[in-house]
Image (cartoon, rainbow over all chains, first blue to last red; front, side, top):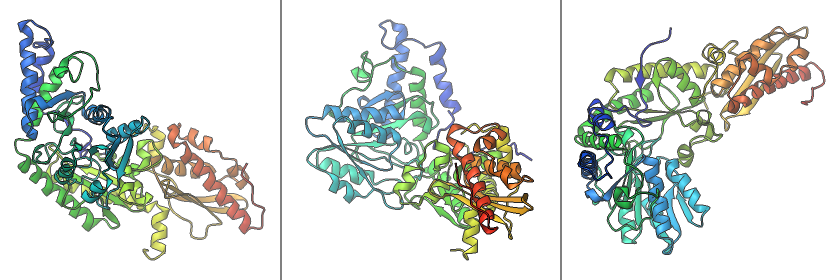
Length: 396
Length: 131
């Protein structure tokens, strides 16, 4: 019998938009539709709404209002930060330092820059997905103009030593960008305390709308524009503002950062229960990512002898939404670049499952998913020749 | 998520012929864990007829469904007919596979060929060369 249950455990992919957020957005579709660039007084309300949202974003990360620029999402913010700094500082140098585990919005942007005369160092990570501060230090040359390291990894949840990396960057006079798309609302952020010059964020990861994000640019950072056109965002990002989206982003970040400790403690408790439950109930399961320095809602396991897409589809039959680092679900031939960078063998990378908890997660979901996982893993192992061989070899 | 046909999902959720045959007359294993697919097919042959067939597969839904369908299609056939089963026929019987999953049906064809040749060698027959 197919279950009608719906258990959403993919909050790192996206979140729903909170009712309070939507309620604030709605008037800006219908009543307050004025273009903020217009002169007449009718547009004053939208102008004001954008500035209020900007204040909220600035406050959430310890920035000044005029250091926040709205974008069409996290990927645009990453593209802008990296290309913008690269092209504007070309005369100073052509070297960029990043890591092997970045989101594709950073990796593919860096690859584009490599085709355009820049040199990029992709730093390795350890088996827990952690970047070494010494590696960052050692990679710096007199041509380095930008260091870009993600705040927390989207797949395995590892939280990187951002403050320490930022400190090194600043000692050497190099700009430091962090993709904080997964971190906002889950980890307290202060751009000054953490020595961050540029920071990307996206509304739909913290219960705001999709298609809107922001880039924090520290005052004085030399950066070219990415989107050229009209004079919106003080001449830095063209295009009529996505007013409802920006309003929603502002409300969402205000809510998400009002009680980070309470929110993350709740998630951590359920996360740790799930991790323990898997470790105690399912043999040959390996936790991916760092045990402590980990996003509060992230669970990532590799199950030996079976493949991720099969697991996802069987979990889906039970109403459970999860994701995998297996190649089979991504349409590419290679499994997750993050798991490979952490040194996982191919078969374990293919057998990975990510469950990310959030506001939709209830205590009882943990037990339900644990039971479902046990059943799915055992069913697939029952038809796996790899498991057969393993058992025949006496479990070696 | 990929768009699988209902037939693929049916054979994935309730695969036919899962298991192994202890005293199999022919066994064929193809694929490797690097690619994320391994398929192993066991044949029981009596008087040139495939009287029983079982499989074990490590892989995605398409790989499991292809194994299930392929074993269904060769059950009861003689080994020469079974050799003629193409990956296309397996995919068609599943109402199609997404383009990036066609290699799963190829694996099924290859696993059957390997199992048949294993049987042939064990019975003093010449191996059939792949075209």
